[in-house]
Image 1 (spheres, one colour):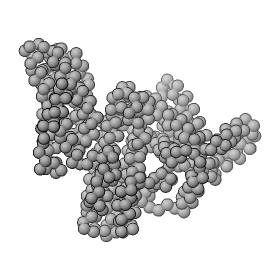
Image 2 (cartoon, one colour):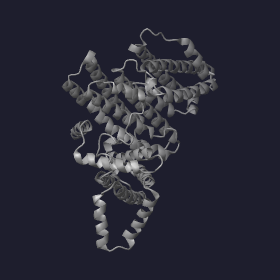
Image 3 (cartoon, one colour):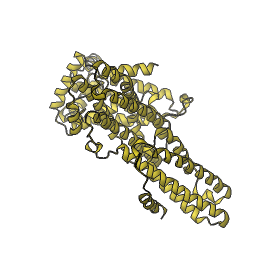
Image 4 (tube, one colour):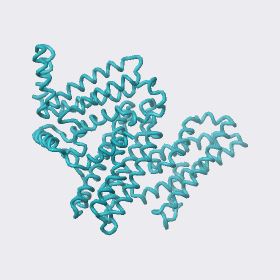
Length: 502
């Protein structure tokens, strides 16, 4: 109940106006930013905000994909401490890159003076000035010092033989307090947006929103679209191509933000926006009803997907030791979330411009029709690959020729790799668990095991059962509204199937 109340408070603040003190602070920060002569300063400041937010959100275990919560107190939190340490080190690098060279040199000298030459009284005076943080530069100094100390502490904690939850918890609490106490770079102070980099980089979307005549409605839609673009930008920081296990696990910090802010977005789309629309009395040509329906559907989809992502796709990711498996999971998760947020942006703006096309906004956009067509074809292919394997397994029972069995089993594994990366993100959440069960079973069944007659018999039962599920799923996809009147074309599918069966 407390978490839900907090989400509502955050969503109300998100759509409200900043107080005078906050406006003054943002104005001072804008002046600093305009005068800052540092390459790629927008990208660096955005990445720093994400790291700071992530370090705070990661302190809440509700933002972790941990399945065994009954044994949290005895669990090893070494992998989570490594994620925190990596984020601290990267944040320090970014802060130093945002300080002009002359200022950075002063920082190093001041640190030496503070720790070696000053009296206790003089040192306390410097600490008092640091607490005041009169300028953005002073805020960066304080933040840099603190994060360096925390990273050193984290390094020492990682040397402990037992790294229990309490160690992780108390370190994260100290980090969270330091970040949220920072005057100019507390990423939660302006819960809405930072004008340095929170902009819609789509002229087409900007044009659609600017044409909304009602000023309050235009503001409401602008904030919704900005927040969706911001979530997409968080995801852009995840490197789903790397094979480095440590870097893959660093993405958990971003997923913790997505989980947290995604819930705020869900609450806003389900309750706050419909309430504001009713207050505006806006229902031109039924657009209010359509907006409420779209946002409610999006909120439901996002809630279900986040649950499945944390319980299935990236479950216990911090403990994973297979970099390829983790890479696949993170790539699929990123793909699913990107698809959800892109669809939400396009469908919301189409209410005000029915001619808007997804490709006008995102080069990699797949519309609902394209998604359904691709998913229908690949599910059909999946079933056919399994059907061929069943035939080969039946032949092996009498002829004892196992080479075709091994070849067909390897073909299936190759197809599964293709399917996981290309079509699995398009599968709706409530079907995904059945797919994952079969993937897990296949991964736990070595090809050599099929030399045994009993093993082949069990394998065939699993293959047949899953093929039945695929045929049911194919029929369900075929009934989607967007596919009505579009018959399934077997010619193209047969050609693609032949490539897998070569």
